[in-house]
Amino acid sequence: MTHAALIQDLTACRLCEDRFAATATAHRPRPVAWFRPSARLLIVGQAPGLRVHESGVPFDDRSGDRLRDWLGLDRSTFYDRARIAILPMAFCFPGYDAKGADLPPPKLCADTWRARALATLSEVRLTLMIGAYAQSWHLNLKRSAKMTETVMNWRDHMPDALPLPHPSWRNTGWLKKNPWFETELLPALRTRVAEVLA
Image 1 (spheres, rainbow, N blue to C red):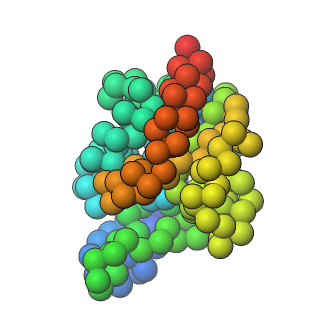
Image 2 (cartoon, rainbow, N blue to C red; image 1 turned 135 degrees about the horizontal axis):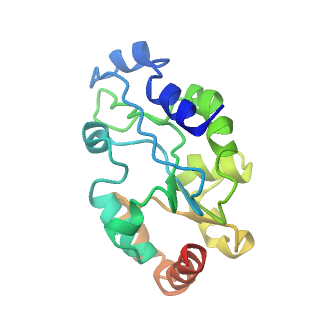
């Protein structure tokens, strides 16, 4: 299957239509596919949020601003699909539950699309795994694995992969409790990203 055909099939996916209609947001599927075969950096998140669902642009929110700062990248470089692939664990916004909390990425999405999408990305030199869902899948961890412990052991996965916390502003407290993230991990991350994209 060609990359163009895969993107066409993926963006037309409606497998979770009934599931999303039953959420508190009662929204329709809108897969956000942002990758090309030439990408050298792969960013794996959880799933698009509501703002990304509306815009169709991944990390088009405050979390994206923080992530770009972590990576040392401007918007034009970050959104260059020829160099950077953004492949979340689910391509659609999963919705909110009745209390307004994010629902988890549907496993059906990864089961259906992940292997096919990753097979098109033969040029990737660095995979950034953001959050526990991405880390569990890519590092073959048990779902009970602690995200903090995984990120603390970031050196074990370099130079090809790096686990990160979610750049959400909800994690500001986590960042304050873990100053090593900013003083040790971020400089190494920025150096490796620059090497990969050079």
